[in-house]
Amino acid sequence: MKKPLLVTVALLLFGLAPGPGGARAAESYDNCSGFITSLPAVVSSQGVWCLRKDLSTGIGSGNAITIATNNVTIDCNGFRVGGLAAGPASTARGIQAQGRSNLSVRHCNIRGFRVAIEFDGGAGHLVEHNRLDSNLYAGIDITESARNVTVRNNSIYDTGGAPGLVRVIAISGYNGTVEGNTVSGVYSNTPSTLSLGPMGIFWRGHGSVIRDNHVSNLDSANGNNLVAGIITTGGSIVIEDNVVLAGAPGVGYGLLGNVDAYDAATFCRNNTTSGFSFPVAGCDIAAGNH
Image (cartoon, rainbow, N blue to C red; front, side, top):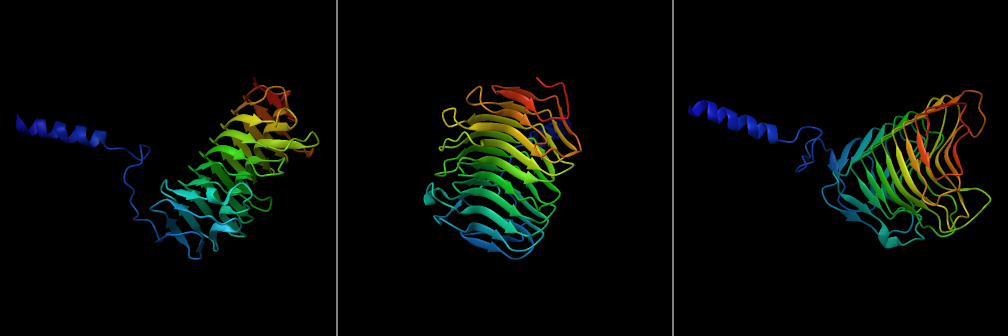
């Protein structure tokens, strides 16, 4: 009778252990090529570079972490990269790379920078499972010269606050897939009726997919700014299964597709928008939107 009992207990214990998709337990650093231990830092060797504690800096310009080579992963293991000490006039960026390829940023909590994550050019970038909050201009900013980018499962909160900025964007990028992200709170303190102001997702480039994102609480600076939940340029773009909810009702666009009037079609399907003057606009083919 003893042996079956021991087997049952063992099975129960294994059943309680978290699987790959479960809660993150004590981190293993076995895959780390090196560690970032202070800021600012420059990563100049390929591999996986990790954090094992919260880090912060008061720099008002430059980068907290600069990636200076290709094939680099920054894995913060849930720890913070903080820049709040520099204040609202900061132009510093949390993680930045220029002209590099095959870069990944994951499991980072980045707050208080003008831009949390910025990739200028390159290709094959992956930004996933990050929490980006209280950044002044953008959570994720990937320039038009980049290619084959994936931005997925990030949480981006309370983007805005830089003096004099009308346009503030939680996710901005080019050519790839934007999927499963949560954006809440995008605001500008500077009113203007001349151009679009706060945007949830601004994505450019042919052949992109914007899917299953949740965008809410776009602040229109007391009703003076036009806002856009999701806006795209370029053709052959699919915008589907997103939920976009305005902060101040009656101002701006829920979905605004194909604003540069490319010949290739923009498809908008099965999206839900609420509280906008123009719930769905600029879509060549629209079906199943609410």
